[in-house]
Image (cartoon, rainbow, N blue to C red; front, side, top):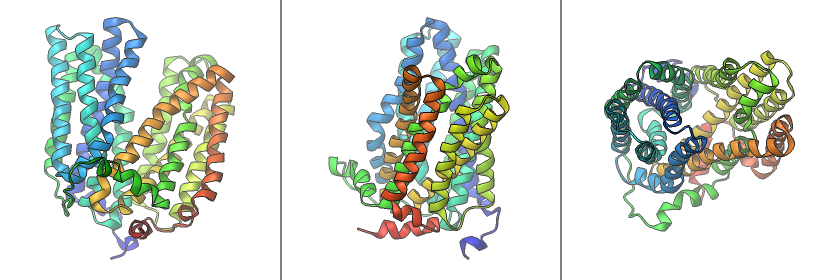
Length: 415
């Protein structure tokens, strides 16, 4: 059966994928809830903006320092087990926060230590979880599976902070206890999935094998182009970091306006992920990816120039939707274009580059806003993204010409 003949809803009826999807929903909800709770609690304890920055740093450092090792571990050991252990560690970390809050012995230092452990577990879980999809769904369904999987994170992004904030107002230990239960539930659900093909690589850990993912990507122009295009788009298009300024000083809406603006990209991304899960792209994957990133840049420019709150919301919705198109194509190309015994390391490099570019993109936005003003900062990012698209068309013609995402297998076979 060809990809085009695959029944529309088959990915949703695939039992292992259903377990995977609900596991990711549970874990993503817990992550969003604990982010709100931890940030609020540590600020309540110390009244220090610097400590809020330390919370982010405690999650960022393990990502940078462990991600490449985590990718090698994903290629060497059972991936279900790695994800399950990571989720259990997350659950234990939340249980410690619940007990410490209820008992009154939770300190600033302990919160940061727990967040550091949480970040380390996430560093192993994130690239490994991505590599499970090609092992639990047939290749013709992978694009749909990536889109549907991405929708779980968008759902959590929309409802998770609200649930966490409301429950924290009732009881802080209750939030952490619920997060722990959700992580444990995610671990149970991951245990139920059936992996069709097990990883085969058992190479010893050396410098060469740890950095093999970077070498692999460098030699595959399609994968390199997809990662590079997304990386610079995220790096330049970090307009969301400036949303508090737009809400308070430009549109004069207050906190509710900030909430609406923050929700808008997630709403666009969720809607697009649902559409792509039902009607995946079978042709023109390369041109569509370039068009999506260009649309992302154009939406950023429109947002920067807009003097209407409604138009700004619409621009952010388009921004989120176009970003989701790019994410689905990139993730599918990476998974199909990478041999199974390399997927962990390649996914780790992808997660490392894209993940760090989010933080650097926020920094870029803040720095240029300080230098040139808020509106020029957004316009610089949007126009810069369009320039990156034009340059990438010249630098990565193989990506621009790719038709079906399954053509990435040919790129994987090249030396």
